[in-house]
Image (cartoon, rainbow, N blue to C red; front, side):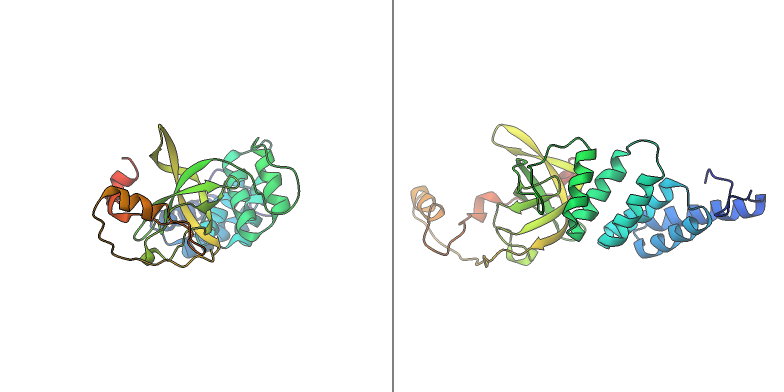
Length: 252
């Protein structure tokens, strides 16, 4: 806690300042422990006392972000933005993520522009080509990393067939975080991995798992190349799936 004035601009006494510093320590501890709802409440109490400190709004917005409370997260990040003299990239990115999750495309476009990102012209959802990357589905439980094609800085379409137990489908449009959490090889280059935040639009494709015995690799190739009506993609999980520990998945 760096401020020494309360919401009315009056000087805080030492006892009150110590109490607020202890409250801030509890708020960060709750956030670090994953107690996001408690963290949001504690940062909210700090904001009531000292409403002009931008990082407190940012941290409450961050807690709301991971709770996927997009409207509240956006509100806090916009307030954090208003209290700063210059662009804070972390605030702008989280505001952009929250605006995207809330479907506020005008605000999302404004935030990406503030970050210096060139967007396709127009209004409404951004339908650009931001390249191939990877997304870690269910990152805080049984994570599964698949390739995706990015439509904007934090929205992408899943390009693999995820395992059925993941709950995701080929062609799903997902909202992902802005910070990279590892890398994977794509062709001759490395692409970033992002953690999925939420599925925004479910694909019409159902997932079916079958066991097929092929006499030769040409039969597998023919099966994978199948383009019958109603088939989105055939993927041979025998060779395309590998299991990693979490540290290896993150590249640490």
